Length: 106
Image 1 (cartoon, rainbow, N blue to C red):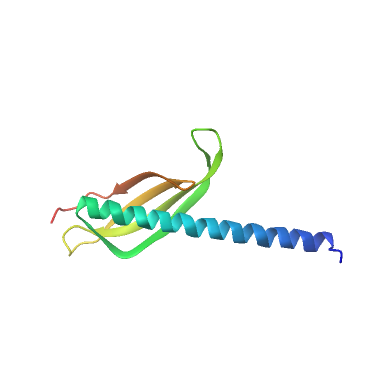
Image 2 (cartoon, rainbow, N blue to C red):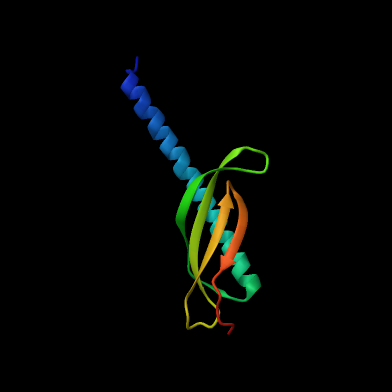
């Protein structure tokens, strides 16, 4: 059985898309887990148990290796009444930072 050039390109694209999707799901799970732990330590409540991909691009890590840089947004509350935004930045599967909007302490 032989494949045409177009069929090979389509197969490569489908495999690449699946690998990217799988990697993205893993990164989102890592981000959500890190945010849950961070919120617990800070004494705030993560709302909706959800992180949303905000942006991504390619960036080099400290060893010069190209990784996917991702920014996820989430919402939290400190008082139970107000909603605030937070952001978690990842490079590859490593957490770079977690940032919270200024908020009232409950």
